[in-house]
Length: 580
Image (cartoon, rainbow, N blue to C red; front, top):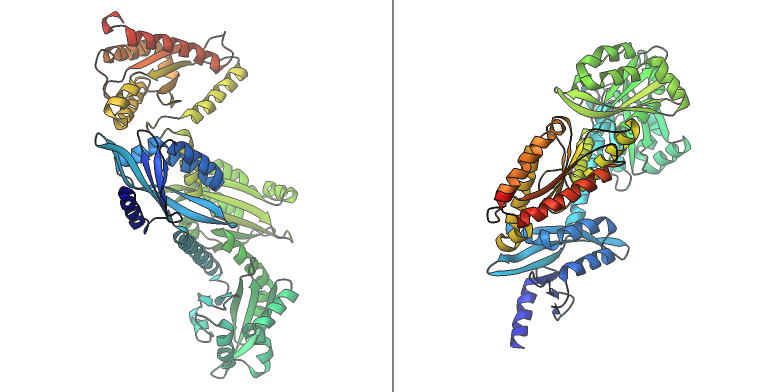
């Protein structure tokens, strides 16, 4: 009882920082757990901690986190974490009352050696940390969206206000030097409260009613709603006795959270009618383009279908090469001229085909949009971008929207590599082997045959090394075995299809020289078998089979090679080196 009291006091002290603590005996897999929610410790000496983890994960965790959690809480990964000095094991979500609570499980203390084999794990609630991280991410996305809008419209409007309809806070973007002389306010909170007195200082007496929609929130939203999502008004400012004309266009963002208020300074009375007509014609188009840019695109080209005249709107400076080559006429001719300078060489033909004007317009008459993924040269490095082409509703203009997707492609390729690459050895994994097997089977069916051989390998002595020298030595043994296979069959893909099982598909020069390579490979295994088991001298049993007319599928070739490997495995275990 005294020991239990001491144990309880120790666990309570540690539980100040943790929601729960687990002690795991790594010899028996039995465990004990201590929790803030329970005054007594839970002892489970006859249970298996790792099996219970799998059961609880499938029962309690968010389904997207189960696989990662189970893998991280496997015995093998836990031992590896203890030996490498890692602390963090996994983060996961548990549904509670319709929401997700985030937890992190970490190694507090662990030993795996002669002095002991145990692990102490702690569980922490990190929901608040995750929420802050998510809020920061959302804030960064919002800032990026604002930057895109501002950059895109900098050459069209003199000032842009982005007003939060929930709290009336706002940000102003990119006023011209001329407009700064008469602009209303800078940035901050209470947009509608601040706007009224500032506007009143300069507004023409006869136009006071026209600007009410700028400082009266309810009036603004009413007019936007009644005018199908966008409202425009013209008004006059008086500055030092001179009259200046302005136009204000306002539109609610798609999610309904903000208002975009775009101000255009039209100048003095001279040529004002022409400027008003031009501004009215362009305002609707440009506000729509602003929303397009704010959603995802980095560049938009607005092309007149009849004349090929165009305008370029850049939301970032990422596409610097195109920025240098902006032109106002002959869009399709200019694209063809620029291809060799800004498009990666392997993608130039596809881009050239895409920009054949008649074919592009014909395809857009039968489908709403057309897309092409290609590589753009940015600082002489290829970056993946996605081009989307669509016609405006009146079919008079062509919108070509460029989106930089290089980060997405790189991440996808990294994920694909992880999905098909063995983490320990760097060889291809079982998933990759299945894909390669299917390709070979398709080739066999298509051309009534193929030229390849399969080498099946199995590592001897792995259990002995793990039991006597530890798992780190076992991992080294597996990596050295893989290196021996790869160094022998240099021109052939090598796959790790099991813990101690490898497959190589011999092709090309390896296939032509297969007998000599195979004989040399077996000789190394035979020599190594004469030594005491060590990570640096892998003993690999092997069998090889060449695809022949009698084989219908890759599996038939594998089966014969596998049988030969088992025969070789028996000989390596029972026959002295001199008899091999």
